[in-house]
Length: 364
Image (cartoon, rainbow, N blue to C red; front, side, top):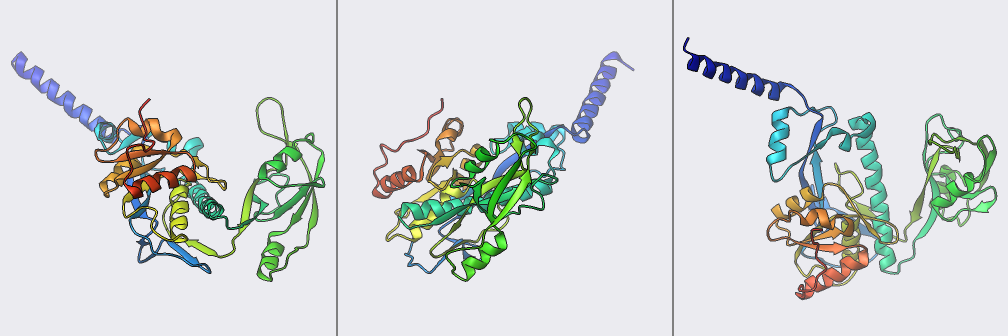
């Protein structure tokens, strides 16, 4: 066989071997791509996304779209060819698998965590919108979760209202940890609580007071490296009672990043006129009870998804602005927001057509 022919044959076989390796050898990466975008002022699967009862609502128009990111499943392993294609593609992003599923987290665990964050974001969106409208909202500190095999397991339960710790009134979730860590590991701490069932009964019967109980728990040392803190193995959160019903109907979505857009949608439905002026506005961002907007993941995918659906403006958390501005889709204006007030001010300018001075995002 001539040397030239042998060389070409060897090169061809090498190329085939490399292609086979690229197809069959998994790599430790996952892919993110633009997910569905839903108008919080509109309908999804045939029913309104925001459903308000017991309070007067007003007609709306335009769009206030929440945006999502689609990710590969936890047990899916990309091959090298898919990873290279994803790196080169404009509308996908390849990231280390552990970025999406840290510490060996299963897809079921990730889905559950995302569902809990989504539920909390809805509550915070309601609170932020109603506070913006000066509508009073009753709030109290609750047990959000109890760690398995922790000292509190079986003594405290999710939904229990925490009134006091060691007789000291609790007003914020952070108060619980502060008071517990005043102890040394192995010491007792006394919780004054309203059990979740009793609280639910009191709300149903419209009773002003609910029966309290005292629960004594022996603390243990935290798992932190270095100095060991006293812990009981719970996380504290906040629950609320609203003066009317606000339901958010949106299935198969997780995570906290739709909070801002839900809050704006609720605000729009409860106020006369349209806060968008008919414009197509999309956005993202977590929101807390005070209306502060926080950063999210996958911003590049969300801007692409929003523009593909026709968005003209994108409300962007301040901490995500630099990343989003590096590759802004043509025709989309990124508006920097840090609070719900920032978003409402920007929408006022968009509604009036006065967009020259909008606080836009720039790449750092």
